[in-house]
Image (cartoon, rainbow, N blue to C red):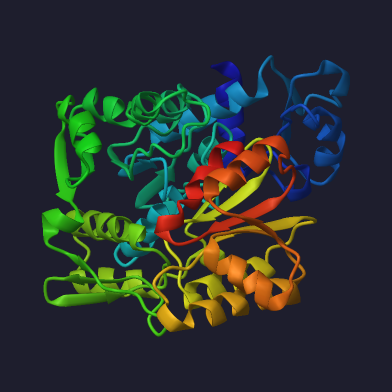
Length: 430
């Protein structure tokens, strides 16, 4: 603990830590992480020259002077420092995990709680074994409530992260059968995500925010001795209103309220209700909470962004109509990447306008200069009408088989299509 005490003393002076040598600020602590393609140790001298107060390194060859602390495992020390900081804090911590929708739900919760509290929430996708401790260490004495997102690629990831963040309250958005990478099975997903419930159950006074409509989550929570605070579309008698080209975004009728969001996809309805439930529990006025939801604009209008070992995925595969497809492609146009690929499925239930609307999408793809793979009979007709040279597949299974044989690498990939096309089938091979 001696090194943690030394680091914490310095941390209290600046409240700044970083693992990125490009983000050095005066008085910060630089943690020199080492990965397969980089070695942070090599930047220790540069970090000190740029104003870092201390550098935590693992290779003594890079020790400049006594401001470099040599440890065996830099990441472990970062996590220990965050855990120590967490233990000094006496504010509510809300932990969030799940297969889909973590980032959107976390942002909605933070927006709602910010109507009453000074909130510190996970920034961006800092939800892994590096990001969670960095998020905890961003919490200052002014913070009244913390919202910490936790992601998992391996079975024991959540179990490790809850030991750092030590949440008092927890929410699992869902446990999905479509995302089995790294877990081996659906039961593996449940076991990994369920570590959040296990942590809460083992700590008296903790509480689970539970989607009462989800039988898997109900079953997982039932085994824990802590209280639950429930929400859900059916449970609350909420109604997801029909989308249209004129009203492309999610709208929810909840009692006397109609909530109009800037989110794409009906699957986000439970995320909205989760944020409202947490706001209600913590005493945020209903009108203020709804205003926060309606004022929330997701970054790049994405519904879910995930990173695999090979690619960055923007997954919006639940549904599609002309307006939402156009919004997604406009978003995609602003994403900076050396390689971008769109995997798009048919837009269903467009009647007599179907071919012309699919032609518009093909023309937009052409104008944007994107690589694209298209799925479904309507896109086949649109390709014939325009003469565009995009790849075409009869089904998402056929596209998945192609991508298994010819993998995408180092790309940002947009996946979008109507529910009936089941574009999520391409995820395991990305």
